[in-house]
Length: 509
Image (tube, rainbow, N blue to C red):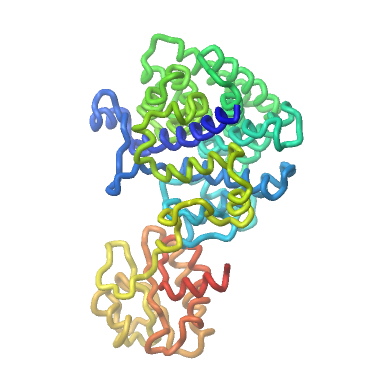
């Protein structure tokens, strides 16, 4: 049974990433656009980037951080409370939030943050970003969103509890199912507060739980799994006024799977997948239609008018939990982004990683067991030492004087190349931004740096390249100036000199 669980855990995570990566290339394309570009069969193979890699979206990113949250909770306490698990989940999602919004650096509370390719914006959902921004600032997020941003990341909850049922968790099997459902519900509500999001997330976690625990699954067995998951979901999300609506769309997806309609005709009746219950319905339809065919399932799940990566991800999670990693065709394993870390996280969830690896990753938050070329620290993005040209949205940030005499050092380069205006000593001018550094001590520079950081935070379409301001003609040391930019580390669109970043890392971590 353990070997089966490992294979299914791997299949679930890799399957979700595969469906996500396949759909990510066409996420914002209509079905007609997809057909025009890829032919009548639609997209059926990965679109590779210039490095030959099939990139996945924020869906798989957040799925991995969900796994980190669950595993950190149980590494911290073998029998944690629901509140403790929720706290770890919040910390994990805030780590993901940093990868979308902050300067690239490894975080002290997340080993996943050491993986360089996870520091990438892959069309993150606005609801997730706004909710986590509020959480980071100690506020409660108020929304009524039923977007699919919760359900698309929930698979690790089902994997973990299925793999540990009757083992390390000191509860009976029914208690474990309840815990799985409650953790899924609370994890969803961190960002999405609509009951249909909660219902969808609980339901998918329970479907994956049961698929993990069932060896051979055909259509009749899958219907039974859906029925059990639906009953428990309605019990856990008690007295929801949306329960009947959720039951209806799940039943509709199953009825359509048994109909004579084509996949595309049926999916069009279920919606586009931008909201949670539609994502689940489309995924279930595709799994039921193609229950022994991984490729057929995810290809069907992404070729429609709508949120192709999320429907592909959820369908891939479920069919992967049914067929296992060995049931995923080689074409969808090859070239998939971060395949090795995904498999490693699946093994962590399945409970087969050794104690040292779990301790290093989820207690000390270090990327133990991950190849060095995938880790992050040597690939941090700094301001180049010599900037001679900029992209159209780039801004050159230099040290100036209040009189705006841009005569030497970086100020002269700013005047000659990037539009700095003589006589203007502060702020944006052309493709440059001036920070006065020659009017007194470090304390006189700080207000101008604070103004710059606020300005940059409101200009997320621009990238700001901060030079070693004050460390040339003004005569200050890097150790004096770098601390002024500590808050800039939170901004993904600000690049700092390497010397500043190393100083900030040494003082902060």
